[in-house]
Image 1 (cartoon, rainbow over the protein chains, first blue to last red):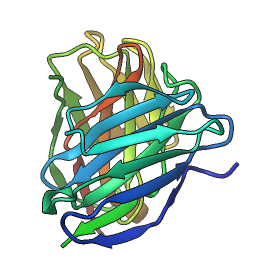
Image 2 (cartoon, chains in turn orange, yellow):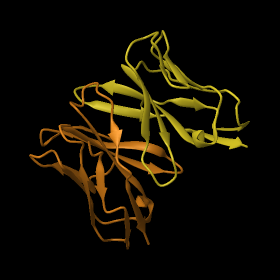
Image 3 (cartoon, rainbow over the protein chains, first blue to last red):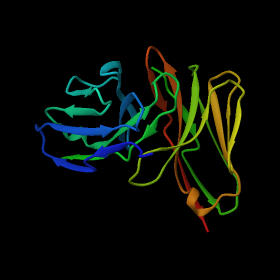
Length: 113
Length: 112
């Protein structure tokens, strides 16, 4: 069974630009969550989607948004990029998002210059 | 908000030694998860704990869900070089949707 797939693996953007990251969950998993990982803040929850609906959201500004498609694939968008947005963005999927464990992809490394 | 205190932050041990790390919180969690992250990769699930007091093993790894539901520990026995990496605990909150709160991580270094 293929794991969680994230594309692209690496991105370099400049301040003010916007970026879209993609995540394909494990087959059969309906919940997709996004996390930001930085050396200073560690792993921080962004949001969680289930059946194309955002069910939970972390404490990030509105520049961070996401969506989920009918095939459970998800995208995350960051607009008006800031230097502080440089991070590893991790996507995780689970069967139902209730209490089944999360399985992570290898992330997208975003660098904002 | 919920916070997890994971300790120690780093460990330097000799190959073959046993390792112990733990996470504590003032909040109650429904589930505790332990992950390992290697450089350039995402966290990989090691052990999931669902009941207070539960003790679960996965090979040389053993983890326990604290009775109070506010803490968990992970032990690694007879460490080997491939155990090197960063270990994270995560507490699961279910409030209409699942959200993980992560500890700060324990960086394990093994001297051969």
